[in-house]
Image 1 (cartoon, rainbow, N blue to C red):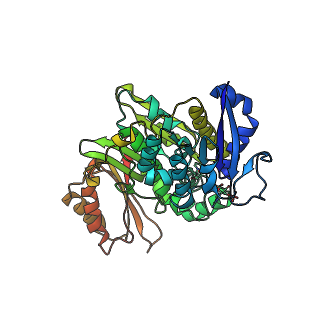
Image 2 (cartoon, helix red, strand yellow):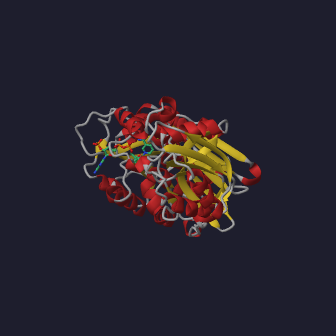
Image 3 (cartoon, helix red, strand yellow):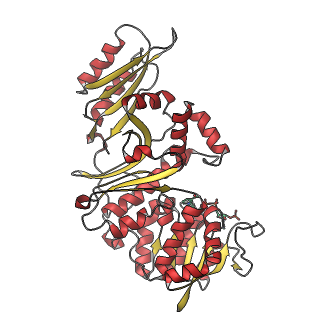
Length: 429
Ligand SMILES: NC(=O)c1ccc[n+]([C@@H]2O[C@H](COP(=O)([O-])OP(=O)(O)OC[C@H]3O[C@@H](n4cnc5c(N)ncnc54)[C@H](OP(=O)(O)O)[C@@H]3O)[C@@H](O)[C@H]2O)c1
C-alpha cells in the first residue's frame, strides 16, 4: 500500500470533532477507499482540556493552529471558521507550504476563493470544500466534475437549514418569525446571533461558490441581491398556501443573456415542485444542466455526520490523487462575474399591502400598478377587526421587477398604506 496520507486538523468542534472521530475509528474502511491509510498526525483547537469526541491521546497537539502548516502533514484541514483572521492565515500558510487544504469554510471561500485557488494551483496542491455548501449533499463535486458536458444554466437551492426550519415551523404552527426563531435558538437550530443565517448572508456565501462552480466565474457576493426572511409573516405563508405555493428562502444563480443573475430571497415555490417539499433543516439544490436536464439533490445541510461525510470524501479524493482545480477550471481562467441587471428579470410577484379599510384604497393601489405596467392576475382581500388594517394580497402577471418596485415605492407613500408592502417573486422551477 502507498504511504499514509498525513492529516493536520484545525478545529475539533461539531465538524472537526466528527472528522477526527471518523479518521480514528474508520481507519480500515478509509484505507480501502483511498488505497492508502489516512492518518491524523496533528490537531489544534482553542482549549486543550476540553473533552473531545475521539481519543486523540496519540496525536500531536499544536497550540497555535497557524503552525500546522509547519508540521509534516500532507493535508491541513481547516474547521475553525471565519472569513478572515486565523482561518485565512492558516489556509494561506498551508498552501504556501505546499500542503493540500480541505475546509468547510464558505465565508472564507466566498470572499477569498479565487485568490486561494490560484495559490493552490501555483503550488500544485488541492483546495477542497465539499462541506462548505449544503452539508452532506455532494453538490460541489457534482458541479465541479460531473455536470460538465453541457454546462449549467441555473442553480437554485435551499442552502440554509436554519431559515428552512423557521419557515417550516411558521407554516406548521401559524406563529410569527420572532417566536419561532427563539424556539430554534433554544433547540440549537439557530445561533445566538442569527443574523448571518436569517439575513441571507450564509446562503449568499454558499450561492457564490455554486455560481463559481457552475459558470466558471470568480466567487462574488458583491453582485448579488440578498434578502432574508425576518419580514415574512404567518399571513404571507397562509396566503401562499391559498394560492398553491410555499415560501422558501432560495439562493438562485442563473445565466442570462446580459450576465449572471445571483439572488438570495424568499420565493414562492409551487406546491408539489421538488423544492417546495424540502422541510425543516434540510437543504436541496436543483441544477439545470442544459441538454443533460434537471438534477435535484436533497439531504442534511448541517450537523456532525453529514458535514463529516463531506470532509472525508474530500480527503479520500486527495488520497487518491484527485487534486484538480478548486472550482473545476484553472484558477487563472475564472472569469470576472458580469452581473445581470437585477431589475430586468421578469416573473410573477406576490404582493401584500396592509391598508386602512377605506373606500378607494384598492383602486389607488391598482392604479399605481397599472401606471407601471404591472397587471394583476388574482387578488384576495381579508378584513380584520374594525379599526385595524386589512391585508390586500395580489398575484401579478409576469412583470419586470424594476416596474413592480417602482409601483410599490409610490404605493408605500400613500397615507392609506400602513406598512412597507411585501413583494415575493414566484419561482417557476
Ligand atoms: N456545524 C455545521 O453543521 C457546519 C456545516 C457546514 C460547514 N460548517 C463550517 O465548518 C467550520 C467549523 O464549524 P463548526 O460548526 O464545527 O464550529 P464549532 O463547533 O464552533 O467549532 C470550532 C472549532 O474551532 C476551534 N477554534 C476556535 N477558535 C480557535 C482558535 N483561535 N485557535 C484554534 N482553534 C480554534 C474551536 O476550539 P474549542 O473546541 O477548543 O473551542 C472548535 O474546536 C465553519 O467554517 C463552519 O462554517 C459547519
